[in-house]
Length: 183
Image (cartoon, rainbow, N blue to C red):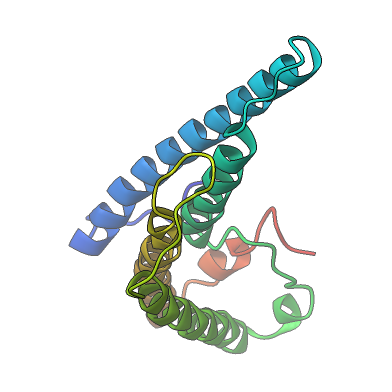
């Protein structure tokens, strides 16, 4: 999903967010393909060959965890998460704009809490090894920290874009926010 508005020239932050978004989307495609292939292989081995792959479910779960956090990064771009804007859209321009800015700022606060606790979790001295694949579960926990840091960067970019649209009094920008995901 592209950002609701493209501005020229793009700031350094906007270019960085674009590049990270492309990488995150590519990683999501790879993760979805990995989960699908591993689960199909598991079904084949279990029901056709009567021999289960011990590592398949574990790999799929770990890939899904990474998919959730990396996929959320792309959704923060353009504020693609589901939003309920029915009442907000009835407000006058400035009130509507500030509702979006405040909502994103509150989301950023929650994301920063995730960043903090994600790094706390990764920095714990003891990490279990995955039972069937044998690698440290720290690699799974890193997804929380990495995804949260990137979500925070994207949320800051979105807030900056909102404030710029508010400053230039651009109601069309705010009319497009939540499009496709609003209820």
